[in-house]
Length: 135
Image (cartoon, rainbow, N blue to C red; front, side, top):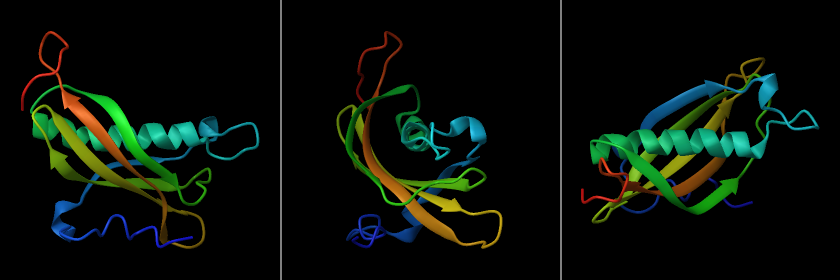
């Protein structure tokens, strides 16, 4: 497997541009039939984390319009503390592209975070009528 931090540390990316936007504990209710944390749950958490930054930049409502890339890099277990770090990669006329990296910290035992997923998501700013609006 390639270095999962490589995409987050792309050229031109400064550490101070990354921001912890969301943190949540994976619970038993978030598991699939095999007892593993469901991938859809993790996707949802990452989408929420990215939208927080997009909403702030848009100064209002946004909607997810595209998931450009989503990589599951390691499993998440029940009880893991999942932290999502986001940064804006591009701002268009009405769109905001956000890159999110999710890390999981096994709260029992080791106190080390592991990158479990990353994604590039595009949001569009919405006006009061629910239609795209200029930023």
